[in-house]
Image (cartoon, rainbow, N blue to C red; front, top):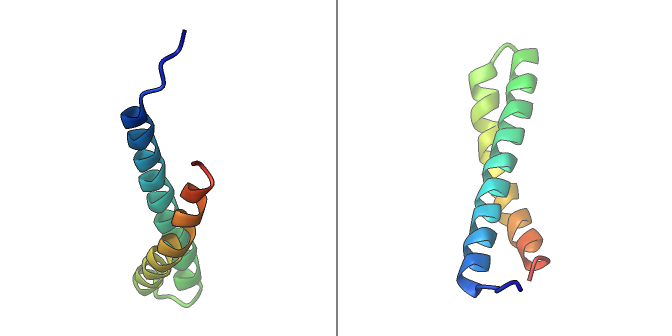
Length: 69
């Protein structure tokens, strides 16, 4: 018999949201670094990519988490 603890479900959803946000930021940072290497400015590309990752993460992650409820 399984017991579904709502507190554990909430914690798991918060962890999933955090990991999705970190993954989004890292993905766009790597993409930005790649573009920056092409233009010989990898640090600027990484910072721009991280900024874009945060913006897109705040837009994308809540929608993903809404589907888990």
